[in-house]
Amino acid sequence: EAQVTQNPRYLITVTGKKLTVTCSQNMNHEYMSWYRQDPGLGLRQIYYSMNVEVTDKGDVPEGYKVSRKEKRNFPLILESPSPNQTSLYFCASSPPGPTDTQYFGPGTRLTVL
Amino acid sequence: SQQGEEDPQALSIQEGENATMNCSYKTSINNLQWYRQNSGRGLVHLILIRSNEREKHSGRLRVTLDTSKKSSSLLITASRAADTASYFCPFISSGSARQLTFGSGTQLTVLP
Image (tube, rainbow over all chains, first blue to last red; front, side, top):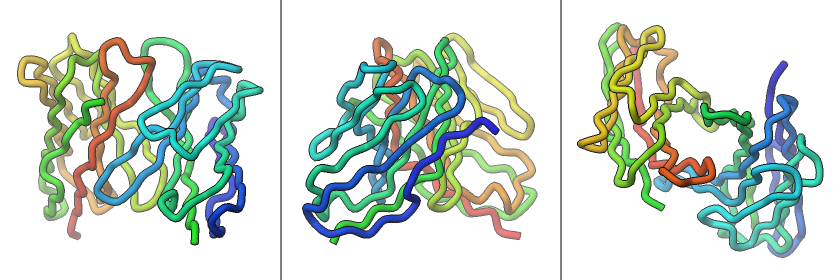
């Protein structure tokens, strides 16, 4: 089944403890992206990647890192999480070509205490 | 980046009625998409309309685009309880590297 998977789905952690949220897609998509969703603010893009080893900042990159060593994986790294990073996170991928439809993962709900 | 703005923020209708929600944006666009999000879940793509198209249909969905007014509308006909969700109209800005810009969405509630 074509899908975008994220792990973990739920995570409660404490301030300053490094964490990684994994994202993987099995559709051979070139483009991958991370968003965070907060009440009243819609989805805001954190980072995106046009292809392997090519990443760029979105609208709210502060406090986050990403890497794209393989086409299928695009992990989101929080080196030193803070409470303002408590949010619902979504990974998305998109095939090459003009359609630009993005396929979203199920989301990761992160709470930083 | 300029966000799309969905209107109304919330809409409540009876099952079987039609639901119309609107979207406005501020920049030139390549295309505009509509997505649905059930509570706390991932977004599901519904329909994409390109800047040179004026209307598009998919099942019970009808989307219009007016680039002169920088607005779009989504019509869901004969709504069902399962249509209860948030609806978003992100867009790809002209010249963007596939960066979708989202608004806060319209929360649709379909009452049985």
